[in-house]
Amino acid sequence: MKKATKKVKIEETELLKIQSMMNAFNQLKMQLGDIELSKTTVIENINKLKADYMIVEKDLAKVYGADAQIDVKTGEVSEKAKEPKLEKIK
Image 1 (tube, rainbow, N blue to C red):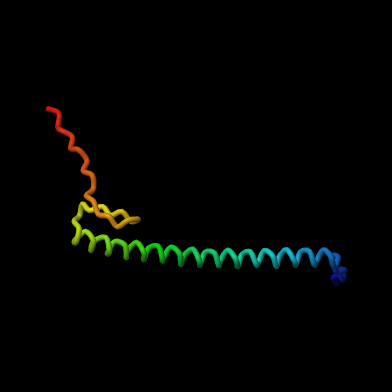
Image 2: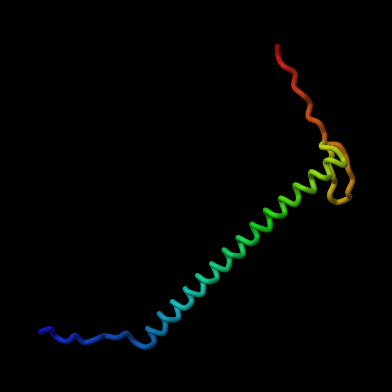
C-alpha cells in the first residue's frame, strides 16, 4: 500500500505574487501580438503607398519627361543633372 503524501502549499502572499507576475507576463505577450499586428498593417500601408507613388511617378514622367526632377516643396520642375560620361582609355 502507498503512503498518503502530505500536500505542501506555498504561502498566500507567494501565490499572489506568482499569479500577479504570470498575469503581467500574459498581458505583455498580448501587447506584443498587438504590436506585431500594427507593424504588419503599417508595412502593408507603406507598400501600397509605394505602389501608388510609382503610378504617379510614371504619369508625371509622361507629362514632364523621364529626366524631370520635381521639387516637392515648390512643385518646380527641372531637368536632372546629367552625369558626365567617362571616355574610354585607348
